[in-house]
Length: 170
Image (cartoon, rainbow, N blue to C red; front, side, top):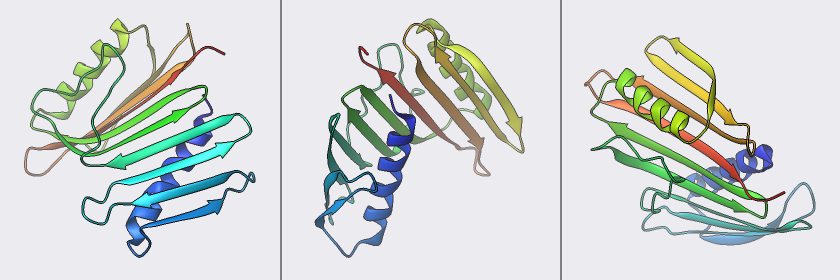
């Protein structure tokens, strides 16, 4: 999956939802693709569709977007979803969930490390700096990628983010 497409589309949607003045519109991407977006002023949910030469990509982002992590992955029990972004592209799916958990950061990371390993991901990156822990890896079988960050909060809550990009047949 084009990782850049996930990042660009997610960033554009988040910027659009933040501006708050437009509830819908159309535009042309830098690559000349036609795109349209809507922002639900009541819930803050942003939706976007981009029609490109390789097919259609869609994005939904917001606190109430249903979490649909790949098989074998689940949030830490008791987590509260802050926002969820789902990108569907012709060559795969990307999911980015920002959450808050009552578990410590190392427990959050251990939870996702075990799930990633069970799902066939090779953990290639581990970091621990200034209260933030991170792991990242790839699944050699299909090139899918994942990363998780968890930051210990002052009030014993841990904030975190999981990003998983899965590929479909290429």
